[in-house]
Image (tube, rainbow, N blue to C red):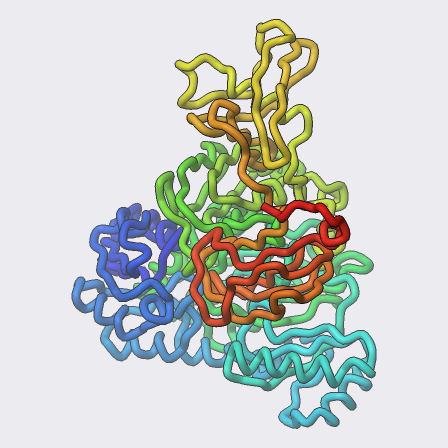
Length: 632
């Protein structure tokens, strides 16, 4: 076994790797950027080395700095985690050339699976079923359009490089193909430096099924069964589970066998995931599942596989990288129970899932289930990196029990003032179709409006907030709202939100929400079903101006990349006003209602702070009233 390990990553995956390394007696070394100088993974490591400024391109994506840190610390091996440099074959080769151990597959295996078109050709030759489509070298619009006609609409245009849903377009009609192709190629060239695309038959009821595989240097390859990752938003996984619901043994044998053949075709070593697309219109069937791609690294969702198999996949990685044989043979691996994972993001579903940044002044993920996180109370959510702050995993004997357990975990989430998607995840789990396993990758898109929690509290939450506001002072550090007060019905509190203040009575005959909450001198915050609700206390005066007044504020620190209106322009509700780039994504800020641009302070290229006033819209109805006051 290797004795010292540098983790070339950050956040929850770095912390997760360190926990296993510590258990098996391996010394750990962290690397960190300026933004992560006080991060949890830095505090957990035996040693930590600074590698550069906050932007990942100047720190976590600088392979030479990471190798230099390994040499400086005396680390014997480098574990890349996932993301960043984890699937960079040149970096893997540089690690080996430096005389270090690479905890991952061989560079040649990474390269073989790096481009989707070449990988699909390789898989087809290995007897792995692939989605019907076109993988040819002729990239002329005429040839691609001809191939799309032959495949039959709808078709999927997909960039051969990269991932995350970029460079991907569904095309329903031949007349839309040319425009969609040009858009897809532009995005692929911009995102990955490679405009080449492939075409695939669009699957109408797609399920995303993936298989965990593992290989060693002795020629052994096994699978650790499948996961279902069909719950996605914009091609990003949201909830994952194992085993896949509705998977019979014949289909499992077929898909897992295909995954093992895929790994064997590239002499695979270490942890990998073979991803398949299934046509689930008539259930999961052996002849209706096709290879999509292979991820040559550990996956975000690997804990659900660990929970149903009882194996520690990071320990497997360390042992394989040390030259050992796989810890288990195929016939020694079995499925026990069901596990489900939800990704907790620092984002606001009510604002189009915009990332939320800032200090975690109140942060409590409870003590149930398995929690994988890279932050603690008092830490900052930075605008420089992916906004995932935790993975929440529940395991039980049955799927229904696992869903209920994860819903209970989400119900107890308390995060403030950073916003999270906990309430959205809670609603996904309780959706009737999800419970019945009526799943496909379009599930969230079809039901998005019903899944996003109402940001406005109902009367029960108002009463819960009033209970927190009036609870005994000695309880103020952790004030529970899930209780019934003995005070007479006329007791209560005056609390407010952007719409104004209310005198809320606490009536013994009306139940309170089973919620939790806290208060300080200025506010009361109540948590219910994963959602956070803030109320102002009357003692501190009135509530600030609502967002509905037409003020367009920066939702996070970032860079204004484009401004699409000018002062005096008429705009309609939903029209894009400007674009803000932050947390590796572009966010369009739109008009909240029909009106006129009365003020514009944003300029293209400018860096802005959170809550900066970027523009102000005067509503159309206000313009028609001769004595309408100026908006505040």
